[in-house]
Length: 495
Picture (cartoon, rainbow, N blue to C red):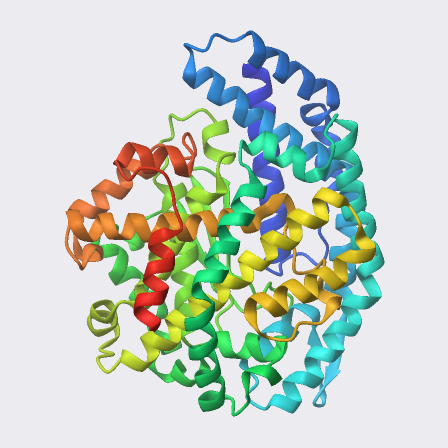
């Protein structure tokens, strides 16, 4: 059974990821998933899930790799059983967004392009006006989103789980209730320094008080546009190339990684990596608009790309395409943290007077971490109860309390990724601090200049998604992943 399943599984992943790449990169106007799901429907039926469970139950505990393999395939089948149930609504939402546009300041802006414009618009009144117009489009399609999430939750219950949250806790073997408690502790322990530094920064940079700050201001604030001249667009690829070269990775000779930086009107404003065929065909997609946010995005997605590009071709396919997203996000955050290193800034960009930028960047990082902590707490409660009537209010209250930016209710479903992806980000941020400290201790404070560090990372990447983040942390000798170092770093560096 397994060999035939793996062949079909591989083909599905290749076609599925290529479809998302073409749509999100702006090369296709519509996302067409139905034909792919229909072609490979046997992979994720309730019967297929049942057979994989039975195979797992009858496999010997001594065969760890086989059991890991079945678990990965079971995770895939369950994920896509839910996605298959909601595929029509997923297409409808994406179709609505791709066809929507906004008339603003005498020009037409796509739904995707509106977020780029908001993040880079220095005039507060103008960006609030654009944010309002975008919110009106979201409100007009939220009924579709509610219906889609209800489909996902209903599909979880048909598989015998009490809720969507219960399904993913069982499938991922993660206690999201416990994790929500841990990130609430992070919120509590960083509250004082965060409020103090954020109030100072908002008064200095945006001329507003913390109590008057809104979600639209957070989008602009996170972009750190005041430092954009120090991050010239023309140097972006050179900086990425030089950084990887320091680790012994020469991207100019990497035939399996393609960087798509072309400008297209409907291209997603959110950079992404599409591992279409691992390790043979990896797409690294970015929509350059200039400034430090582009550098972080490029380095982040470059971390993903290198993880997949160095995966062994000999791995079973389930260890290439399905795994713990918290692990690949750790590698992504490891690289997108580099612009917070004064030595890296001086070396790659001749940016030597970087103290103010680094402080601002670390505050933005804490804002983002607290935002995702709030997202997880909200998502866990919503998916445990399934009560959409309270969802919008709960989202707005949780995000406002976590970030201190007054957040409207309208984004309560657009600001939510499937399958508790917020938990992957949070676990990755915690692991990244531990891994970065390890690299500095073992190889040098400027670990990105060490080929030995590069070889160490390649050895981990060679295993693809065979192990999860907790297993890799244990294998390195770091022990259990904890938020303690992350909390300490924020409090120490922003005090």
